[in-house]
Length: 382
Ligand code: PMP
Ligand code: GLN
Image (cartoon, rainbow, N blue to C red; front, side, top):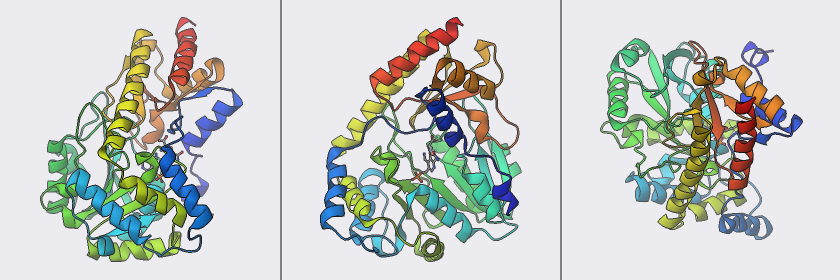
């Protein structure tokens, strides 16, 4: 068996969700909203299942969805992508990332990764034959410096994989840091693989800045998005990739042999959803921001040290003041003894693990958040 998968642990999301079921816990671990997602978008999908095309759609995605992605990114980010040669639909961002890493990396190529990193990145990079070069981000700001980049980049760097906004620690990369990273990409002729699945889930009036919008980066950026996050429909697994035709040609070759296509009915519904009025997107952000503040204020009242959360469904606490220093033990105790599931952030580090940060998902109904806070109060008293 291939050791990269044989020796790898079960994903922390699955582990914590299983523990949540086993202990009848309130699950603030794995990131999925309580909300069922916009009814009109779900209705479109249902209609498309009953009345629409249910055979293989085109390998690159339904033309109407590729067109909608182009219009969407033009409207929100001022980016111009040609739907015919620069946009491809994938089965979730996960497939987009796996395919891109397979397509871009040759064995021995170096790949710059920022840890904490989404759990799929490292096994996929290794399986593609990439040599990881880590940049370690630390609380409370989780930012990188020019020295960090100078150490990680080399003329052998093929890809830098950037997640912005950053899951799990909910930071948004400041534009000056993006510019610095762009400079290193250009100086080393590296491709920026940008996981921007959280681009719409961003708070406090801050605007998402796609890496592809920075001078010189349009041609060397592979931009990855996901309808799962844009419409709170995490199980849908409809992703999109935007890249210059020279890159897209090769990305498409990987996609054609991984999944080839993505369910056409869901594509139809996502095309509809991406064309919704701005008010849907601002309303969605406002709702999540309110939930963030409800959980954040509750945690602060209980005495927890809450870290800032600028985007994503997540907010984090520094557990140091609780007297505990190990996030895994903290999360285990919380789910087993007090019935609240969380995610220990050390799971997202491969080396130099940060062990004092725990992630909570706030994309929940008020009653779920309040129920979790009641249980956490008992934990604090204990
Ligand atoms: N990248 C990041 C940073 C994520 O948080 C997620 C899912 N939460 C994904 C990729 C996967 O997206 P999808 O479900 O569209 O595959
Ligand atoms: N992205 C989700 C999270 O961060 C989980 C996705 C998964 O379960 N693989 O919680």
